[in-house]
Amino acid sequence: MVSTKKLLLLVLLVIGIVFIQPVFAAEPFGSGYAPASTPGPIKIVSATASPTEGTAPLTVQFKDTSRTWSMYCQWNFGDGTKSIGNPHTTSHTYPKAGKYFVNLTIQDLNYKYITSQVATITVTSPANITVTTITADVTEGCAPLTVQFSGNSTGNSTSWSWNFGDGTPTVPEQNPVHTFIFPGNYSVTLTATGLDGSGSASKQISVGCVIPVSDVTITTWTKDGEYTVAGAEIFHGGKEGRLLGITGINGTLTVTVPSGITSLYARSPVYKDSYFYEGSWPGVNMSMEKTQSATLPPVSILLNQKVSEAYIFTETDNNTTVSLKKGSTLLLKLGENGGSTGYLWVLTTTSGLNVIDDSFVSSGTCDGCGGTRIWEMNAGTTGQQQIVAVSKQSWMPTTGQEKTFLLTINVE
Image: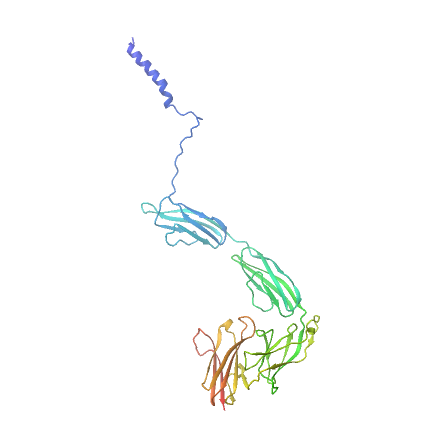
């Protein structure tokens, strides 16, 4: 028989199993408690990039956000370039389209180099450049005709260039104003340029109503009427206007002057900085129909200052010998275009020739139009004198191969 003591122990054991078992039992499904997640690998090297896509040229800002701070920090931007120094924040510009994989290299706590790809940058090409419109407030009219132009284009245009078709320099503006001086049909072209190419378009401008005025004879003479003035320069359009020509030995010049130009200016060959006369004529001849012509009467220009006897020499007198009287005034006129080519005349003379003035007369209003260099000299000493002029760029050494002008003067 089982003893009473053993039976009591058995009963207690059964009771304990019944009450303790729920504590160790598995959590029933749907109890509301989520199972604990398993931790993933920790990224030691990381960074941010903004923006990660866009149109070329694209500038991206980078920032190191790695868990380990490192004295060493180098960016490989994926386009063959790397950062300089150890910047934790930096920027980089991608000029061309493409997909670029950016890597960052740092050192961990054990000074081991760790590299990881931290960004992908996508750069797309800008839209092709296409000039969509050229607008003009007027497309035809009488000369001088002033036109307000404007241009528009698709794509990322960075520069503009207008060619007006009349021989004037191109203009780098989007909305220029241009004046056509002479009659004719002009093809105006706009070229827009960007990083991805360029595009052009044209517009026709018709300029008429300007009547050529032929056989205008200009005579220059002095106040006292003793003689006409040879070598006087005749301009239209003002003191800085267009040079029409130079009066000949008889003091006259025949030119063709466009209608609408009603002023003439004369400049003495000796007193080069004084404009003595403005000639004008009735405007009735300036408003005739197209294809008609008009002939103006001769124009006399009075030089109010007596011009001393002057001898004028040009490039056609190169390598010649002339004779002058002591005290004579002479002018040397040589073509020069330092504004466009950099070539200037360097003048030397013997001691018997005194240089009184040195000036430049532009043949137009642009820097590359060129003009004439004019020296005024006085023959102060008898004997053989010489003038030597060398055309060279100022920054280049003299080699002896330069264009040279030589004039020998026997002063009596």
